[in-house]
Every structure is written in C-alpha cells, then in structure tokens.
Image (cartoon, rainbow, N blue to C red; front, side, top):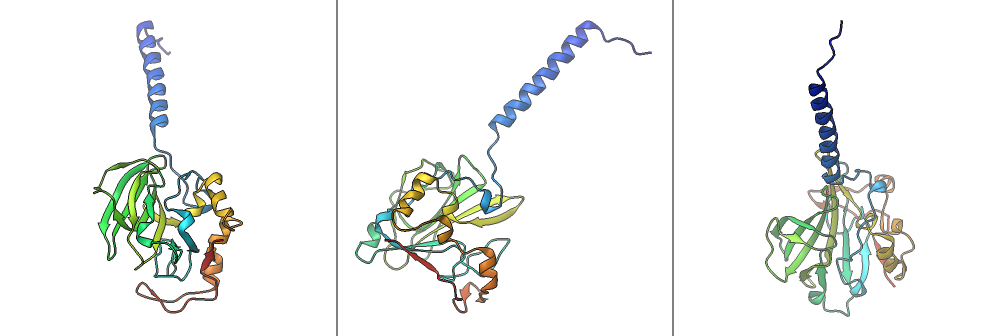
Length: 234
C-alpha cells in the first residue's frame, strides 16, 4: 500500500522540480553555440572582411599545393588555408588587417615574418580564425578581447603573402575549413563583384584533391598536382 506524501513535502517537491527545470533551461540558454565539423554545415556568420580586399589580386584555393603543407586531423599533404596575394601595384606593408569576428586571442606568437594571431569566436567558441604575418598596431596578449572590425595591424610586407586559416575544434579533433564557407552572403557579394561566381570556386574538394594526389617531404610539396591553385580577382 502506497502512503500519500505529506502536502508540505509535495509542495516542496514540485517547487524543486520547477526550479531544476528552470535552472536547466538557463544553462542551455547560456551555453556556447557549437558547430558541426562538416564544412558543409558551418554557419555563414562572418560579416567583416579581415583584409582590404580591393588591394588583393588573387587568392589561393583551399587544399591547393601552394606554399607548404598545412593540414588537420582528417587530411594530410595539402594547403588547407588561403593565401591572399596583394596586387603588385600596392604597398603590401600598408594593407590593414582587422578581426573578422568578435572573440578573444586564443594564441599569439612571433613567426619568421610578423606575428600570428588566433582568434576564438565569441558566437561559436569552437571556431578559430588564424591570421598570419601581422605587423601589430599595438601589443596583444593571450585572452585579449577583440571586436569584429578592430584593427590588428598591417600585413608584414612583400616578403610573403597574407594567410587565413579557420579551424573547428570538435570531440578533441581539429578540422580545417575554408574561410569562404563562413562568410555571410552580404560579404561574399564583394567577391562576386570581383568575379568569383561561387564559394566552391575557391575550394578544391577533398575528393578532387585525393584523386590528384600530392606528395610531401616534411611540410614541403614535391610537385604541384594538376589542379589550378589560384583564383584571380577582377
């Protein structure tokens, strides 16, 4: 035979359950937004261009054989970032670089040319933007908060191109995706105005790259494959 709970205890139990439900909802509402590893599913949320696009002449394709091997935990021997090559008519060292998203400095260090800054997105904390070869306008340190459009500095100079990479961290795996997979439609229209018909024009698919195999020695490419590496802007 089941003994009825005292009314006072029943009220306490209902209140506790309601509080728990409310607390769970609060936790869910405040949780960071996570995005899938699949590059086809990443959000188009970037509305700020990190570089002065009118000064850029051409851009290397994602998974190209340009530069050096830059791969993730899922692929190897391919350049899974984009090189932005300035026009020869502009001062490469005068090109401004800004934060493409609001977030925090998750890593920063000196490279052979300039400073590399990695920015963890505030909106999607498992997405990281990696900008290479910056001449910083002001000192930055780990954990600094950045706002989309905030000046980072200028490109280091004509000794190298500006590199942009985007990484997604999920289940302790590091997945590189194309920068262009994250641009919103309004920002991508700027590229369309420069002659880029679709985002896919700037991306070599994994299947196409696997079929056109590259060989590497360390991080150096031993050959360039047969797929065109560059998209020239109008």
